[in-house]
Length: 232
DNA sequence: AGCACA
Image 1 (cartoon, rainbow, N blue to C red):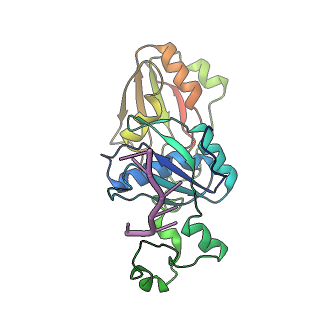
Image 2 (image 1 turned 90 degrees about the vertical axis):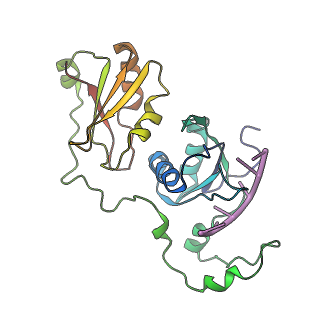
């Protein structure tokens, strides 16, 4: 009843997406948002009248999809709560990995012209957006220094300091994460210093709540965000 | 609301 009677699937189906967002941005943001739950094999979004506002995110493991369905249910994404279910059918990229992929001839309404060019089986990794490849932040993974020492050194502040972000992080991505917490005001990316940002809240109680909730949140698997109070 | 793989 919660997510319908659809059995678990490696791929999640998302609807109620903001239709004004361009396809490529949407796919990249979905990739960033969901990669915290596991390895993503593909993100599919079409802009056709029938399919806009929807997307599929394919995980390499079913449990990753299950966690995503539960934990990201109704997550405010581009100002609209995501509605997430398991996909009804197996994604092509999954079938290809299993070797069970049959070029689409099971579609009744589709003309059979499309499958002609399906001869070539290219690696499906090309569809993954800003993957885990060239994005190392120019050096070894920064060490976590979010021990109590840092907490004590920096007094509470309504402004949060965010580090260890992937360089391709956009203000919009951070807004989506932080705006769900009461008192959120704005995100400020520092153009001159990629990988860091400031997030303003109305007061330090509210900023603390957001910090607790989002500290360590991974925008990509190797980028747990480090959140501290900004220095005054 | 709408389940595809341009």
